[in-house]
Amino acid sequence: MADDYYKTLEINRNATDADIKKAYRRLALKFHPKSSKEAGSTDRFSQLGEAYEVLSDPRKKATYDKFGEEGLKGGIPPEFGRGGAWSSKYAYHGNPEKTFKQFFGGDNPFADFYTNDVPLSFGGLQPVVVKTQDPPIERDLHLSLDDLFHGCTKKIKISRRVMNEGGYTSSIKDKILSIDVNPGWKEGTRIVFSKEGDQGPNSIPADIVFIVRQKSHPLFERQDDDLIYKTQISLEMALTGFSVNVQTIDGRLLNIPINDIVHPTYRKVVPGEGMPLFQDPSQRGDLIIHFDIQFPEKLSPDGKHLIKKALK
Image 1: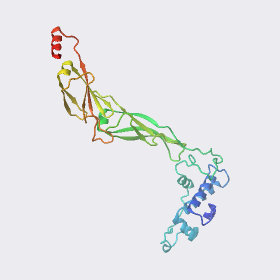
Image 2 (image 1 turned 90 degrees about the horizontal axis):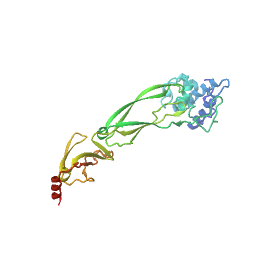
Image 3 (image 1 turned 45 degrees about the vertical axis):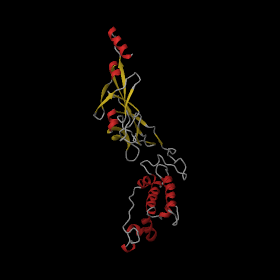
Image 4 (image 1 turned 120 degrees about the horizontal axis):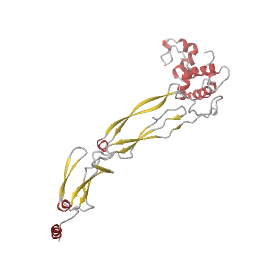
């Protein structure tokens, strides 16, 4: 490199690390081939990349400061390297665009760059675009009551647009998202996968949000953490007592005696036989049994007489 690294970055030899970064930021944006059409901009941009790479690395900088470019690129005797100096030969990789991208981050540094050191328009470039995140993409996740009782893992394949290397073209790629369903999750639970939406050059990928939707169950209805079980009984059973057999979601058979007189608003509560609590799956809600009393369509005179006699 013919010019002094410090002169290239337009700083003095007492410059701090912050000064070096600030200088590179300002000059790299100024002489980037996309922002400058002046003759010699490409060469200057390359010189800036090499100067920054050396001066931003403490070991390379120490070697350059003590031995100059000759010692940096030609190598120095090992006895001089014990203090942490760069004892092997240094060669710039020759890709100033790589240095630029590493400094600003991302494959498209101009997409979301903002600085007070430079104006918001770079010659032939469009004004700086401040990245905004796309709105969340919401999808329903249909789960059975058994899934929400026991917990499970769901694998969901999505297809999304991914930016290719360089940040200017994209392609569609598939990805598998894994959802660990916890026991006790409720209708409306939201599972967020941050920034898994389509990628774009000037936007932050949207979050993908799955919303739990509970499927109907042939035996139970869910009410918060409780399970509702409905069964039909005769008037005779309602008045004289009976037992209810309930097959639970976890495969047990409950035999529940009903010794009370069952009226239309009567509910039998069986504690601890409902859904697991999300905060503590070892605890559970209640099983609540509703009764649909089937009255006889007609009674014989003798039957009516016997009922009246029994109820007196």
